Length: 269
Ligand code: 1GP
Image (spheres, rainbow, N blue to C red):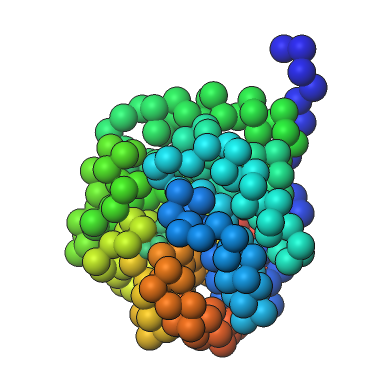
């Protein structure tokens, strides 16, 4: 291959995340989906409010209708807040040279190999070419699944089958994925159950457990954080009410946990 490739896995952004978790913080990530922005010019104002409230990272991406240029544009606008920018690609078109890291995801419960490993093979070269940090992530779709579940041809884990989600998470971790994203789908009528989150975190204390999809109020966010989520993601809620989004960030940031720094990966099943 004639281009110069640079593989970066779990470096600066990973350290930023793990240090905070090690200090007992629960993190909040704000998802900005360029395809859903009603007013792209308002994105900086909204992001500014959420940054001031304490959100830890901006994730940029979505499952449908996101081009690389869209991600570039949003990333350029968000750079000035000084928070890590993480691509959240629904496909290879969701990568950008202007982000700091990418959730390098495999949609493990997809029925289509493209979403498990096909897109990743195509995307890996681009990620290495851009020199973006890859965060190896198991993407597990639970319940409703939203657009991500439909487009990604997921066979979602039923809401009450916590042990199935756990089995996916264990397999992912054993395969070397240190980030476990439990996804109910953007705008899902119900988020991932706290029981699922708790079970996964208990078995994999050194994995970074991310939960998102359908979180619309601070009570739900707090419940998921207390159940063991290391990272709570919200996206859509900001379109309904910026105030509620800010409230969620404050609530999540208020949940402190006592735990040792995440260093020695171990599996306790
Ligand atoms: C979707 O988990 C994220 O991928 C966020 O979902 O838009 O429902 O907050 P919401």
